[in-house]
Image (cartoon, rainbow, N blue to C red; front, side):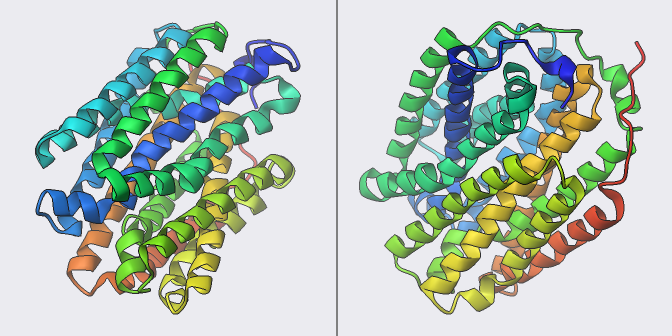
Length: 401
């Protein structure tokens, strides 16, 4: 990690851990909100008289918005005080949840989700860099894994709990619950988040120089491929389990919970194994994502095999995500770390959008049973990219001012 990113808050204690916990909980609610449409896709579609592929456009639009907004918003926001920026982003996220809960039409629901997407675009650009700045040198990997663990906990508790609430009380109440938690996180971080040095603002004129960094470009190409393959299958995992695996509603929730639990294991593996084996770690985890997608259809034969594939998938998906971010922060110049991560976030969401579209095409064409096969082919191309391009010694490019 770049030493210049740190705020010098000390080697431990409340001053470091409390804001890291707050960031982790924020990650939990951001990804819970992002995953909710996946876990309740059938119910949301039914409430607006749509099919799953039509309702899935909401996921694509959200992802495209993050793609388009990530870099422009981060360039603008690099001029803001970090703490105020974080609190403002969470406030916008809260407003988007409330509007999602009361949206009377699908079009207004998509509009409300665009507000959440704008908050998402900034949050995931700053969360990992801020975590690495709050932590000291010896806790940097752990700090990043804590934030990403919030993603896994969202899969374990957030999406399944949101699904349970949605099935019992209606999908709108799930957004209400997320809004309540967001309000609590906003108050917590307002109290414990330390003041961070704003640093030099990033100029859009510096983007071409950033793109000359071969290591970053390799990660970005792999990101699009792996995310596209991942979400070709994952965007339709709920209807896949219902229609192909013929799992009951409770079994679908349990399998998704296994997915999230495995993500925590992946986060822990990252904190323990990544620093000494970066290239091998990335290749193994990306290979695991491709393998899990390829096994979706064979594993649909039973609940136990479906859970086993979800375990592999969840572990590798979380680990590859945080490993890519760590590589970006390592390779990028200190003054460009947040923008470099914002590019990753945007490209990851391009992959989500492409994957959701590709999966929807498969659902309405050959059939939902093949979403994993198609996704595996794309993710395997990402693995080839990782093997050929990622892990070679490279030096970050210094930006000229």
